Length: 237
Ligand SMILES: [Zn+2]
Image (cartoon, rainbow, N blue to C red; front, side, top):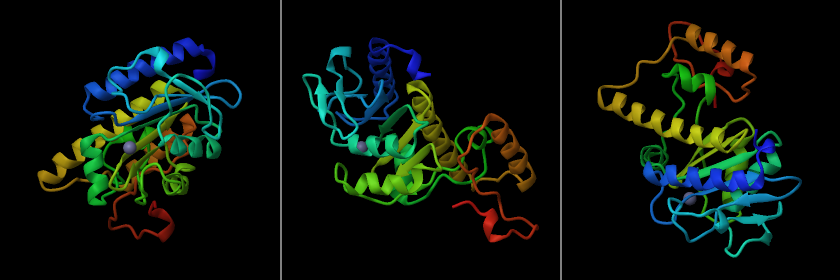
């Protein structure tokens, strides 16, 4: 849990995760941002205008829950508003990662959500990944678009923009970003090869049981329409 890590350790974690985002090509130029809750109402976050692959621990910014800077020589990203909306709506979330991984962002640009039941691990950990409506980055519209989905999902695509993942600590949120991109990559290959073969409704329900056991609350991907009559309530949003 993030709460047991010191501020100094969290700064080191953010530097490491920024390096991974950049190394994996999830960000270009100065894109992307990472944040984590500190004690009380303070948020530790990445600076704007810096490549996330080459940050140092002293570059981080500390803000309050409204985004007002408390300390740091640099300024926080204007996209921090989106992170703050998540912290307001999800008391369980300790960390937020935003990036533009190219395959997941391709799905977001094409308007195709990652909501098919194809990979057991994704069903168990992340559930379905919807697309939040397009909103101009850095405006108040973007937090509003995210707010619509974040209560029930730990990973979102942002239409014509990128992806957002949240978690119980920095690494948990970051690993979900890797899973989103991996899922997009596999989905693209499957579509190139003729389309995904979906898991059965029975298997999705079995996996849903594992999710319940682990206390995961975000909805599972949609089960395929089969010979079984599916009620409206069975189809995930
Ligand atoms: Zn962005």
